[in-house]
Image (cartoon, rainbow, N blue to C red; front, side, top):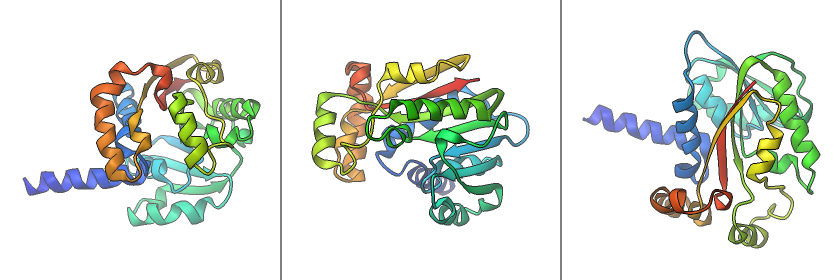
Length: 237
């Protein structure tokens, strides 16, 4: 019993490091990815785009995959401490690079990103967002997969609170579901889902976790898809 409790605590701690904010809602992406694909065979070659503190790199490296952890600047300084703490930094390369001009072609089995396109499209630059997705497509091997989780435009209420209370709320270019479909049109298949509504309004993680339970019980079933604030899925090259 104690061993099982410790395993659950460790799993939750890892999820907090992977997703950092509104963990209960954003971690649905992880469940979706694991449900819709199988990590079989040997280690995969993976690229984490816009890694920030390295959460998704941690998730991949813990499974024994080879990971390139990338961000625009300061990647190693930001991400190495977390990966060192979990003892997996030896499976990870830290590289600074622009997501709209990735220097790879046909190199990776997996590319992952979370909450990246909004900042790339700052000041309403939808073309940069498309360039980033196109660069990811080029970087993948044939049959490779993009695992994505991104902030949606969501409801008018979300738009109001972002403008009023989020410092970068007026700069980010939040995407719509239709725009994501357009960005991913070069892929042979795309599977996705959406989730989250109330969780984004919590002032701390305890509040967000409580509100995310309401999302699970109510919002993810009754709220229209285009009012939910997270889209996550898998696109196959």
